[in-house]
Length: 232
Image (tube, helix red, strand yellow):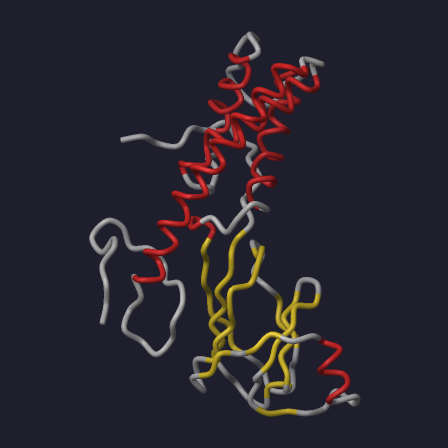
């Protein structure tokens, strides 16, 4: 079974493609190996912007506090999917903070929240919670920065070759090998199309694989026993 390559292995894959000696550890690297180590993380960020990779799905719950309207997003928060008030069986609707301010200039209205907005690193709920409610937060994570030799990317295995190929074509540009860089870029784009198509199939199955509860949407994948299972 294929397994994800470590940060060190990813760097060495790119080094081999530019006929440079491999490294034995990431710590203290210099020169082209250092550039590649940075490009690997930049590649992760580039891929993150491309689509919602299924491995980045995350969920958590938090409790409101009476008369408190803002709540910190998760430390690995990237993009919101939804907020659900589990206490009142209600999916909150996203709106702008400007709407809240126009509707309640004094910022004093309290009740069961029915709206939310994202303000920097916080959720703002409106009306301001009047009590303790359990909120389920579903979101897409941002990939963690790779730093140690044995770190592996949280992106799916299908995206691994994209990370290598993106880093390679950027490195070739740095080396002024533009013809080779262009070929590598085209190969990256081809790999990305395949990876995104594979990701979409899994996302479709994640939508199917919901427990029979009142809330629709993406549920965490449960592989392999219930992969592709349908609940009616």
